[in-house]
Image (tube, rainbow, N blue to C red; front, side):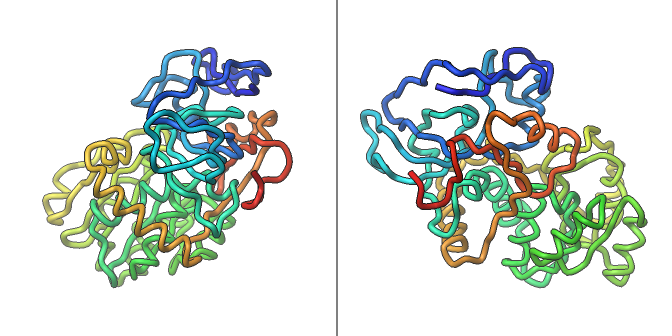
Length: 335
């Protein structure tokens, strides 16, 4: 089968498109999927350099999440059947024509989405929903600041916060990215490349500050965002796409009665599967009602993988970056 394989931990240069890679073996409790599309995430970029907290052994196939059609089911599979359209948080292996995924990592594909849209909903929407529902306990009427609001995870945070009745301040590095955030419901916009983040938050909130900060970026904007928290605010730590892990003066949290809250979807899903299952049910109701529309910024054929990874690595991506694995255009009715 055709597969994109990482052979060395040297970034994009370590990838090679193999034309005759062995097909994965079907195991009990798993399904074999004809992959239609795989969405890329910043952890994929980190994995190519051995910088992510999870390090698969070489050689490995990137692609943490995917959408496709079940081609075969293993012994003991009861939840799915051949021909089902599914999305999966595969944890790797998505950038290939076929992938084997355990049945508990599969979810029926929402009928409102095509394969390319659906391929990117697991990691970002699942992470953001868990972050806002369980970790921040975001309430209607509260104000939330989203750093990196036009990224894959940022756009989902904006959408979901609006669904929960919050006021959303979107912050991003360009006006074009901010227009994307405006289009999905952001109430206020801050270009932190040209505006003072802390001063703009003061203006928008009348000096009160924000109840929640959603930060998957890190870097130099973390401290001014912490300083902008309201009393009993919650600062969600979701990642460090800027590359630098910020060092926050802890006295700032003390003075504001604030909480610094980690968000790691992978551990949450494995440790609290029943809570995650309920999250999925609630999300699927929103998808099926047409209330959530994934932002897909770029779609590349599998053979054109380099610019797709580069968009993430260079932090140019808006919304999700998707690799189309199956030939042709993958609409929701193709199999």
